[in-house]
Length: 269
Figure 1 (cartoon, rainbow, N blue to C red):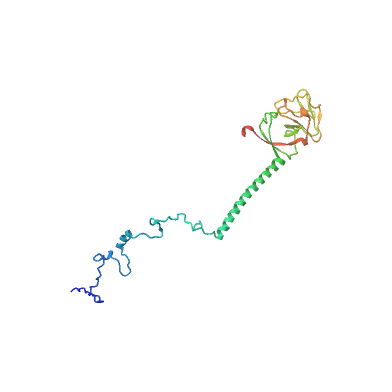
Figure 2: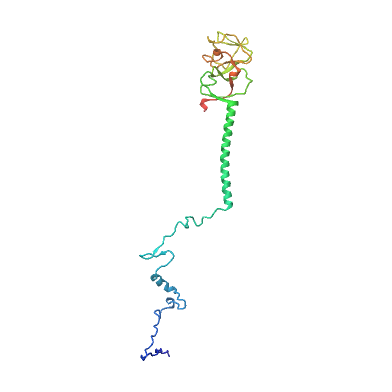
């Protein structure tokens, strides 16, 4: 048998008639499933009631800022920086990283210094080679044709002093550079005859590699010419019209720049 609700009467005061006390009404969620009701002990919402509360309760998360017109979501800090504008994960480098960076910079500086050192060494070497040991000069004309043509590049050796007949020499005479072939050495007696032949020490010289005669120039030296110990008689291979010892006389050893050791043809450049 169900318990009959008891009526609780308040005590009368000052002659008032007793009135029944207010009986508490059953909760609104009475008769609903337990999943939709709240726990009275901790007032913790049940899983089924979370959606309803979320729709009705205003959001008060950390990104909501109060304003006059309502709560507005705060802008997210996309930069990830702190108050001073620095990245949060910007940590100072470790001593090992600092040492590694310094070593890298030192290595780069050493590479640059090494490159310029090698470049200077190469330049100095080239100056020594082509300023004191070797020389390079182009052939200016066809005075040595057909062996050497105009435009060919001549390499000559400066320190050679054992010159003999047949050597091709680069020399200067009266401030101009010439190229010619030795036909007589110091102490020899040279003569160019009226028959356009070359006579050395009383013997006619047969030059199989020369394809031209050797005429005498009217304004040349008086023959026969006896060479001093430091003089050479030099003629060009193209004997007709070329300027050589028939024009300006013997060439002194001090006027010789060097002995031609190789020729680079113009067609091969």
